[in-house]
Length: 132
Image (cartoon, rainbow, N blue to C red; front, side):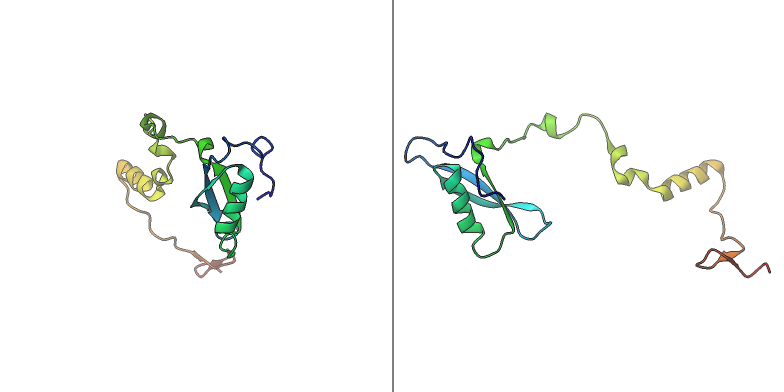
């Protein structure tokens, strides 16, 4: 987190005494996800950062904070945007289950599952038993 707000937001605010909501996202531990912590009301971005630091950072419960003016958050709730019109299940890892594909191919070919190989191999890749 930088201590300085963006230059275009530093002194921006509504009329004197007008408070704007700012959403605060916090990270509990380094490398973890950013989760919504809550919101603060502030007249500008500078005070919003101070309020967020005071509420979500003073007891070391957060390693990183994001402070975003609520008006700058864009909501996507249109079903046409979120639900793709085409079936794309082939892109999911579940569509690539090799065991099922092998069983289907064996069924078409009319063969059964092959047995274990006659000669086993040790951990080095050398054959064990059977041949000298």
